[in-house]
Structure formats: structure tokens, C-alpha cells
Length: 107
Image (tube, rainbow, N blue to C red):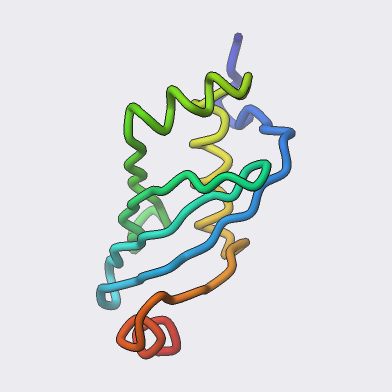
């Protein structure tokens, strides 16, 4: 697949991003959550940061998650890029799993 420098490959399978925990400060935050694809949860960890050069996400997906996604017939690389974009754009659901996470996400 040929990629143009300013074109991100599209991921055309619908999914939902849920953030369960966010910790950090003004420059960087550690995010935990999952993607809900066809009723199945795929967990991820990410570092969100931004200053000079704009916002960015460092995403961590397990080999098991990538294997399961591939087994479903989906492209793991396109899914990762799509997930990064959703996180940067705020296209997520905030669903904290502890009271301390509620306070952190509300701040």
C-alpha cells in the first residue's frame, strides 16, 4: 500500500473508544481504556502529549490484541492510526472505573 505523506489510511470498521483512566499534568497524560469492536473489548495504554509541534499520542497495543484484531480480518496498523486520531480529536467516551479516575477526568 502506497502512503502519501499527508494522507492517513482510513479504517472503515465502526468502533467505540472508552477511556477508563487518565493521569498526568499540563504537558502529558497517561491514558488507559479500550476499543469496543463488534462487542469485544481490546485494551490499550497511551501517552498523550503536546506542546511544540502539536498534540500527539504514543500508543501501546499488546501482540495479543493485534493478533486478535488481525484474526477478525481487520488491519491492525490502520486501526492503531485511527485510534490515535480519535484520541487526539477527543472522539471518546469517558467512563472511569474508580472514584479517583472520576476526579481526574473531570479536572
